[in-house]
Image 1 (cartoon, rainbow over the protein chains, first blue to last red):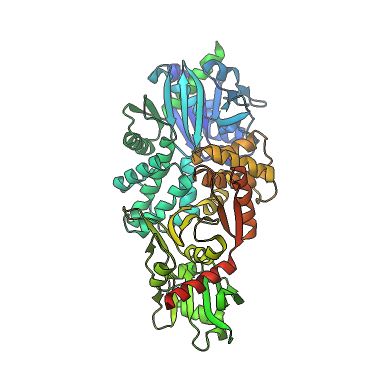
Image 2 (cartoon, chains in turn purple, brown):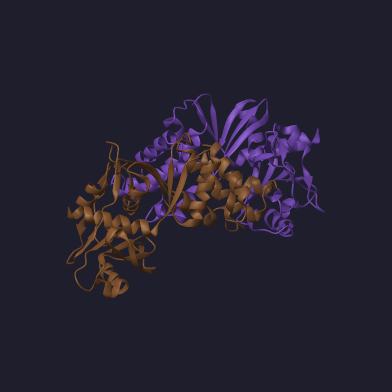
Length: 295
Length: 295
């Protein structure tokens, strides 16, 4: 434990990861648990953290938490920092949990002068972790339940937008006629491409979705290919909303999802796409924010 | 029964209505049942119809069915008639149910030369029932689970598009984070208008949807107003996809939904909007199609 400089915690809605972090943001060890912030009351957080982190909390190593633990009605609400937000602004917004040495990272909010327009909690820490990989400026895409497209300039998050792509995919499969008999995605890349092209070319998503049914009725797609088509359609709509496919894009996330987004971006004409895995990036972001808070 | 010229049946996915129809398409009597076509196997249809229509089937009065009874895997599949489709084309596509005097109305399909692109089953009958109300040409909107926007020229359906507005509204409420704590719509017209304006101005629906969460987080909308905002947003996106708000629009459907669409169309700048109730229109459409099949 002597090489540990920070205990980092990534507390998402549906799971929890605790990192033992060394100098430079290196992950020395990792403990995970399914008790996400979404299902916990405020008083549960210190108990769950003590159980999962265990002996890592002995001594006085600082503890820094990012993600949904800082949302309203969770451990301790941490106000959103407005864009532009870089390391200094985020570090200045850390909030201490009651009766604890644990500190929580603020989310970032976009306010175009007309009140709050968008929010992130957790992605700001990933983006801070990325900076040395991409230089100080980049277009960063974080695919997922609530996909984020963020613009980073000179080390600050200057703008971002959330797309409910992953969550809509799940809801449509679960609760509409389109989901009847639909399998899992990942089996038909051609159907995925057809969906992406449809999503890119049809701005009216609520009309384009009906094409899932038409592809099935017409026999052009087999039932087992429909999940790929639907996934492509929603990802295509997300990419199509970004305008012309110019400039570099950096994808951050899990392998399977990044692969789908990388394919879709290439169908859309993006030529400069790179990808970075998520867990180490979060730990590095926590370490950087903690360092910035010390200076 | 001597004045009855046709037994008309509107067999939707989730309910069944049987009309005793007189000369000119007048509804003399109506019997309804919750056994929609969505839950029935082919062999169930004659049994259910006999139970619901009862003594109306005595004698040899013709019986004409529209709606989902003619879909694949239901009573008898009736192929879609291509656009443009008017009374003559639809009447020419009637199909007789096996061992029965019952005939089924075909749905209409849109094929832009590139294979089937959209379908309707049941709405074609409503549109045929409307014609005398609107002259031979109109833009007809049939709001609902799968809203249809149809162009009618010289008595024929020449073009149409389906929006999954109603079904998406239900799926988002039931199966996403946006639905948590959400009440029913119809309580806050101002929130509905805010949603419509957002849907009209934001072409990226999957991004606009996240604003439901932002309106709640920011405190701008109370939880009980969110269903109206979401409903407005989805209806606004549907209307926004139609282009400039010019020309007359005829709404067909149930009172509550038509009122919401009429409000939204007015927010969008449509100035010539009229509305017609649905049940009598369907009976009149069945009667007209039957008359056309006799000539």
